[in-house]
Image 1: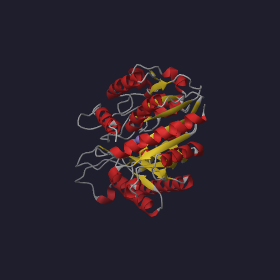
Image 2 (image 1 turned 180 degrees about the vertical axis):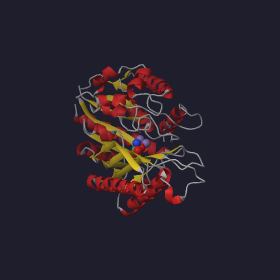
Image 3 (image 1 turned 45 degrees about the vertical axis):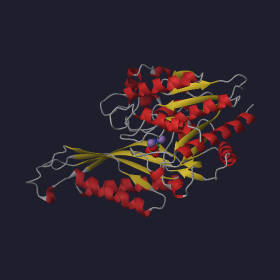
Image 4 (image 1 turned 90 degrees about the vertical axis):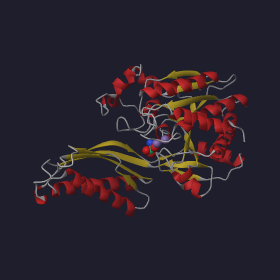
Length: 407
Ligand code: HGY
Ligand code: MN
Ligand code: MN
């Protein structure tokens, strides 16, 4: 096996050192370590003879235009932001492998222009809603987003300006209409491929997801002197509701629901909590099942709150439908997997991806790599060298097929 797979893995681990928190991988939208990642990837892109720029949403974009290329281009890429205490491969691997495939296209003299995008923000950690980068590229960036503020009161507009970019240029970030499509290579982030001992899979669709922020508002009081029946304990209410969230998801086939964030005020051991802020993330491949679950959980939150003499506030941060991948482009990918000698596998994605946004703008397909241990959003997230090599071989077959088609 060539050492390109080992080099790609090493490159992801090098990029992982570019973090806000030494010893952990945390890189949010346009924070200082993003500059280091841009510098590293820009050098790679310029070495490949690509023209490089950063668009107003902070996406780093490299364009490789071979001699004799038709006006058409394929866009490849993924995101370079992470969740807190992340793994080294979620998102970044897709950018690194896209650049490897530019190198392959040059070696194979493919007459197909390739644009590689390192999306600036897919996880939705800093501002509570995801896909800032790909929304800009897909023409779905609503100017009202600019006013959203992070935990430090910095708006998206300010974050873009602090990075040295001009939010007034967001229109220019919209993807070129000559794009034949978008392909995202990404780790599966789940246990399926490992369970079936497979390296790769194509993706049929990306499940829909709803993200809410909720606040149970009670009343602080003394932990020692306040009898239990006189309390309006916001944390006790939140805890009751969280166990309801888990119970509903456990009894609903195909539904996952997660409360990942909890913020207790005033957060002192001898004070009855006056309020708790919680996040809710609900996903299901069937949109109406997801919506029914969200409605049910809100009804339960209201009734717990009323029964306990509290008030409830909530805001919807995101509501994305389930998105099918493009059949034709995915069939190309499936035939490339076969041509490269690997068993075929098609599966839905339980994780969200920039592909679900890009699919609204152009034909979109994904290629999954096995996640050892089914682990992701965790520092022990990893990939196998042979699966990275397999993905590169399939990517080359895919590009050859596509280049022959779009002459
Ligand atoms: O949350 C997700 O599904 C993705 O990792 N952003
Ligand atoms: Mn992720
Ligand atoms: Mn990801």
